Image 1: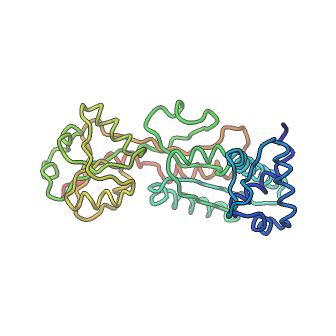
Image 2: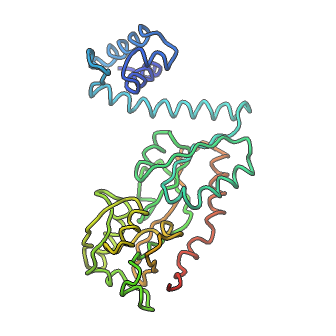
Length: 315
């Protein structure tokens, strides 16, 4: 089986999956319904497997069809990137940056970094996508992004795909979030994780990356956090805490502008930390706009670790 020459047909199949019909896929691609049908039939002959469930409305793919379109989307993204890079080398196109980042990065240090880059390269074209871990790394490897702002809480070299190269930006220390007037908020000494062991917690959803970091730190401190409510929206977590429904420990970036009714405290020992990095494919292809964005991110985040370690004054 040789699918290399079938890239266009795979793209056609992807459009069928996206639009739910041969006619709609044809309209999106500027093809007739008959041409779409011929492309799909050719792919089925090449693979020896049915790729669509005919007779369904909207058209549904078989398992084989889903596998092929998943790889096809990644292949199409890589080919599009190659076409753009070649045009850039030939001087026919300005730099393009497709950036993925997690929400608290987009609401804090990414915008000023983008503004800095735009001032330096006004002809560059930027696309910014909001996503969560580990989707950011998956989409980076699939070729959807040129650069991704990501985080981890281990040794970066051992985390994620080997093809990804990370540039460390800063460490984001987590903060204790307490209801206003809480006994630990009234103390002059900063709390420890162990001080929160008997509290009711506001946690993250099942599989939550940020709360996984917190849970690991709590277990290292000798206890399992007892959660009553869960959300991956940091504003919602703060609102639950402000209502007196529990305590939490969330990233420092999430409490730069805290919700009224909460107290934010630095943890005295064993504070969870997430390492924030700029990730790119380690494929040896020079991309000046990517390197320029990394430089802008480093300039924008310089000193954040030091400021993050500074304890907020008691209210």
